[in-house]
Image (cartoon, rainbow, N blue to C red; front, side, top):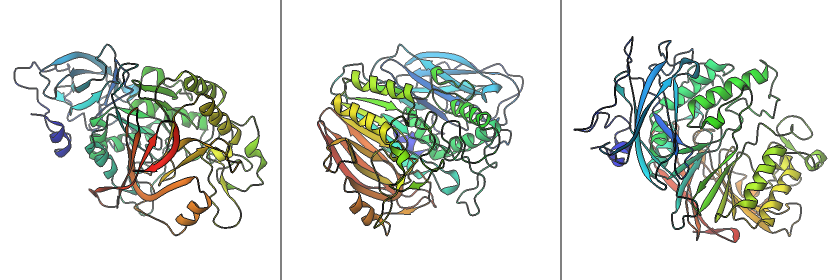
Length: 514
């Protein structure tokens, strides 16, 4: 019998044969045999109240240097099943898709007409080979009350920096939804002293990005996390190029829009996204909302593709208080269209909570120790007017907003002010910043300058510098937050511990110790 416990304990290799008495999914016709084509596992994502996306990508050799996974040069029929039970005795939907070479043999099954607020199990079959089993959920129906959302979120998974233990620990919690907030892969070439060896060099073309995604997906801890719950993903810079901003790369190199188009194509192929997110060359509309009954709306933002160039220097970094360009009224982090879209979503929202899944620090942060001040022009401190428009909307529409952030490779929690330039300004939102999965190595619980930074930024209430993820349980009465940390990622299988716990209450945008 397949159980969620066996799925977690046994890796993803258990329960691959059909249950007795159940007709197996028909084998696809083949001209050459496929051998273990499901090494990248399975995933689901983009849940609605009546649908979800099922994903897989065929690869017999995940680290083939051409990025095509060692697959034959032909289209392959992939059959799928969706069931109410783990043993597939109650199959409710089935069908087939064609995995094509020009999309790296990826498959996106976009389902609707399912039961709201339901748990399902799914699997694929190709060339006589059966995939691991995945678990997914649909969201509660609009207006549904009393159904909590167990949401975990993470960011920054650098393969060379360590083992993906936080993924396994997150999967063990069996969340309802996992949000990944950027830097799912790193485009860098080889490090001098890697913890793990990655295949290929710096990602510059489609083959390179496909290969990097494949190696990440083939990791057993990554496969486990993807199979346990639906995902909602957004990118940050390293998914394409470090510190890119709009149409401008960090360094001159290959034509950037061509490189960006390759990265976007590989991102779509390797994520459980809908057809609405299919890229059009160097453009991909990734911002969107996911509704979870009456409890929460998750608004996923793109803070890279539409932003203005970095204030004062044109390059990402720290700037002083004399950088007046930070305050120019027309500067935007999201672009006008995305800003208007988010404003409308907040205005129309009737959920208890509005969660903003995004990439870089929203609250003001003085990074200079002691005298003087220093602000990151890569975060919202470099786009003050854009932040002011957002905080004004949250305040005017009286939304219970919680900002979910990644990027900085450490846990933080604090309060977003209506106007950070006014010392007496009220808080309008809480910001929860997840640490990295592996980036920056093991880290420390506290650094020598941690207490200074917290003292100079009194609206910031918490810090932990280990690797890990954030776990939340969201109801109409409260949002319970656990910052989950692991002591090391330079060795596999480290246990997770809770480094900080808080409760947020509707109508009170403050952090209360749990």
